[in-house]
Length: 402
Ligand code: PLP
Image (cartoon, rainbow, N blue to C red; front, side, top):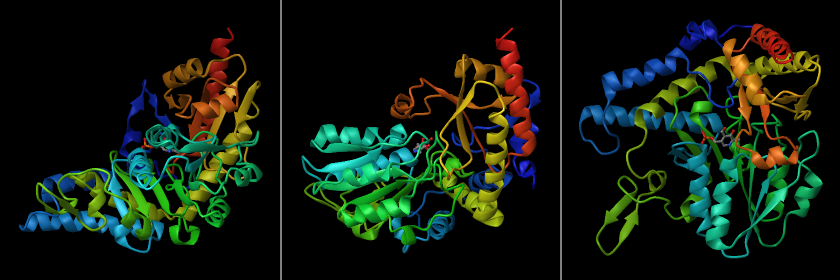
């Protein structure tokens, strides 16, 4: 197994004096040197605002920024670059669709989400429900953490307008059968938004082949900087949707009586964008492309299987989320041990795992647990990280059972 840690300067650091074992990539990924260098180089050599300067520096900054739009278009295989809207994250992208597409809905219309959604794919729709009187329908999931497709079909009614579901679950790791779910939604004349926050750095995504109407993800979960999100939307919908925020950059003509709006994508990019970090995200996309999504998926699958096997040897440990198709995410509970206590003791050994409800409280309720521990892999993880985790859990159990 190739060791990619050398590409990530953070691994030269220690945590509590121990080598850092970072197992929280679903939360945010570490950044390769090329991304850090690109952001810093932008500020050193190219910094200017975009789309509005006639001087050379601004033109160069604009080209660097727009090149990343094209690279993102290529990553997702979107038809046009203007179908890529830069936001501040997945959360912002979902809120944009909820508020803007939501303007086209009326009281009594219905939106379908699932039990395994992150709060970012629940609360924006609840806000819309409270503003507009729309109804939410929730797809149940099975005990192993898979979408119940029979119940899914029953969620549709003539009033269903949109389905909004995760490509992969941040808690269970489940890779959802989104292609099939999209075609069921379209057969019911509903649009589909895919929350790809947990998929984009693990799986190849082809929005045209999937035929989804919206696809959203965050750069920081794909080796890029924080504060950058991507909203892909089909031209047809983005054109029909009203602007979400008003301000500079999104207008064509402003008078005190009336404002007309810029064409896509500017219509949805009010104000100064997170320019340097978008440019940095371009370096992350190059990095992903150099390794190849297939290699990344294989690397993480080996880690997933090895870690699952080893974790299951620990007495009292139960994995929550045992779907047949998973990304490198494993949530678990250990009988008699509170996840927060275990997480704190692991941290003392230099091992970073996430504990808590993972912004998915309804999912915790579904599995009747207050919290879980979660390990999630990135390209830089190795078999030796898993060995450290297992040794660390044994040490934690010994400490707590003394
Ligand atoms: N959706 C899923 C499935 C997630 O895992 C996350 C973050 O963990 C989000 C949405 C929110 O992403 P962000 O905080 O980058 O907006």
